[in-house]
Length: 77
Image (cartoon, rainbow, N blue to C red; front, side, top):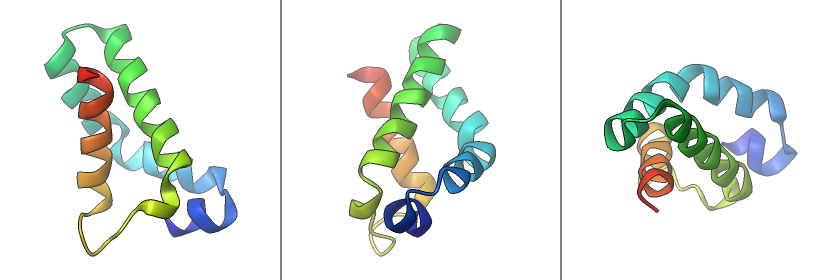
């Protein structure tokens, strides 16, 4: 998250996707039961993570928890 916030590092975002993307998709799919909508929710969550990377606080949540929250919000919003 630091690399994304400080450097706008697209490689760091790709690493997050590789590490957490499938889990986030499973969460979104369990809420939506629609593959395309689940993909869209995960994409929206990563857009929000990119946009708000500087607001991520590792003292409050892990990256996984934060991304999970973003994914749920995107799926249900």
